[in-house]
Amino acid sequence: MSKAPVRVAVTGAAGQIGYSLLFRIASGEMLGKDQPVILQLLDLPQAQKAVKGVMMELEDCAFPLLAGMVATDDPNVAFKDADYCLLVGARPRGPGMERADLLTANGAIFTVQGKAIAENANENVKVLVVGNPCNTNAYIAGAAARKVGRTNPNNYHGMLRLDHNRALSQLAAKTGRPVSSLKKMVVWGNHSPTMYADYRFCTSNGDSVKALVNDHAWNNDVFLPTVGKRGAAIIDARGLSSAASAANAAIDHMHDWALGSDDWVTMGVPSDGSYGIPAGIVFGVPCECKNGEFKIIQGLEIDEYSREKINKTLGELEDERAAVADMLK
Ligand SMILES: NC(=O)c1ccc[n+]([C@@H]2O[C@H](COP(=O)([O-])OP(=O)(O)OC[C@H]3O[C@@H](n4cnc5c(N)ncnc54)[C@H](O)[C@@H]3O)[C@@H](O)[C@H]2O)c1
Ligand SMILES: O=C(O)C[C@H](O)C(=O)O
Image: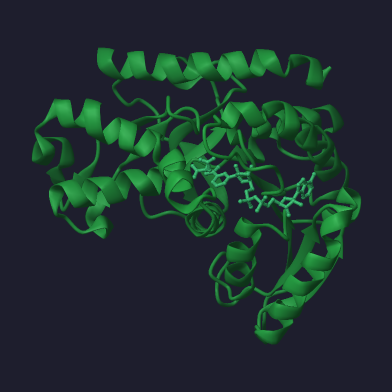
């Protein structure tokens, strides 16, 4: 007996991340090789022809799991009965910009879309905000949804998984250990250069990664800035912001949330008040996923160095929250 299709809404379907994302969703990489999907694609009116082109290519792949497609510029149509929403549609930054510079332009997108999701999607919808600045945009979408009710405000996430994956690859290179051996990594806070990639709990085949590295100067002066500024480094190298690696991270986030994680994963979730993070702030924290639910790993020791790093990225998110307060009235 094959499974009934689930509805996956993707915004920014005509964009570069969308182009790296949609084919992998349709092939089963996000929700499993036994889960049929219906893609509900949202983009701006002027991008609808380009969306149709992407749909033509999706058709031409003859994906067995692709049970249907909808293209629209209407959020109410895009999010109708959606089980999963990937909110990618937003302006990317260019060289010399910080992600927070996008807040005014992109923030307004997420009040509209958070409301539309809450009014139209499945009550158990899982929402991942990729559009930057993704933490505060997820906060905006969740706040708009909370006004409507129906959906779970804790299910409006910001994507920190690209940072998590970047940290793992940097540690694999430093230690010479396979990236698959690295467990218990976390990137705390904001998807910005203030993020705190915390390797204190990370292990490789039972060995402490911190002990394998044994170099706090490398951690502070190389590892943290390399991970924190990787987005800008890619823009400098490509002339465009990351796309395939971002799509991969979105696949990872939703896959693990839907099907379970076998390790800690970093998710940008509304804080439950733990670790001194004010409730509601969308903050990168270590999570485990099981049976379609995520759970914040509790009780981790936060030493003085880590508290300073966490406070810095928290302060930035509190400033961003204050900057959008009028948007949420
Ligand atoms: N969180 C992360 O780790 C991460 C990683 C990479 C990129 N990003 C962000 O993802 C976003 C998209 O990046 P991209 O490279 O795909 O950009 P892009 O410019 O290639 O594509 C953006 C797409 O979104 C569409 N769009 C704009 N406003 C929309 C709206 N209101 N509704 C629906 N669609 C809309 C555009 O028409 C375009 O097709 C950017 O904000 C970028 O900064 C985040
Ligand atoms: O850096 C950017 O603007 C794109 C994205 O957030 C990234 O981290 O690659």
